[in-house]
Amino acid sequence: RQEWQAVLDHFPLREGELAGPRLFQALVLHTARPADGAVLLVTIDHVTGDAASCELLMQAWSASYKAHSGAAHYVLPEAPLKANLVHRCAQPAHVLRRFYFRAPDFAPLKAYIADGASGFTTNDVLMAVCLCALAPFRARDTASARLSLMANARGRGLPVDFMGNGAVPMDVYVPWDLLLSFDLASVVRAVRAGMTEALKALPALCAAPPQDP
Image 1 (cartoon, one colour):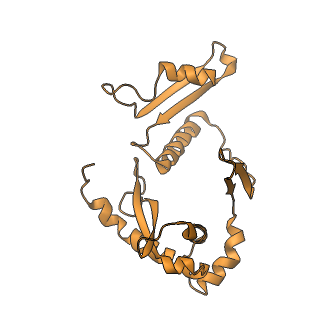
Image 2 (cartoon, helix red, strand yellow; image 1 turned 90 degrees about the horizontal axis):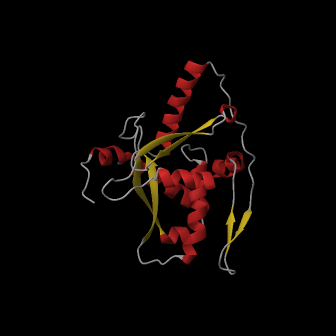
Image 3 (cartoon, one colour; image 1 turned 90 degrees about the vertical axis):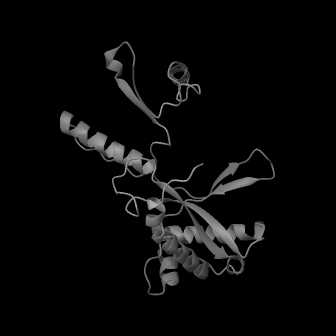
């Protein structure tokens, strides 16, 4: 932690208003002993890139390194999945439970919901579970609940190899009475229908001129 703070003191990620932020910064950290090796530290402001951009950058970087160094490709082992992790909040009366689900765990449920159809994803089921769980605790001053998402617009209005922040806000609406019925299959279908319509609108949204903040 001390070394990291020393780096920040000499190379702040965000400088004063006149200088502006460093949108991309690469530093090589090493000691006086070559045997200790070195660490390449790269910081990217979210304005210039999102998670998909970082993945594209790392793929290009890895390919270039492999081509010039002759290093063999190494695949990290898959991390074990855990379920029902309990986190104690600062407030004693509140407990946060975090669940991790594997895709095979949802296969029977997805098959039941699809009923011979296709196009439903594990993410659809997870969002429906979340909506049904939160619905009783939310104010219902409109006819439908709004599910706010960030969609990756690559291939949906942006080039698939787009470098930059390709995240686009997207809203899906589900009727409150449907959520409060706790009919999970119907909620999943409503979420998928709303997602399909919202994704169809992404190309036009990406082609529209940017609005002033």
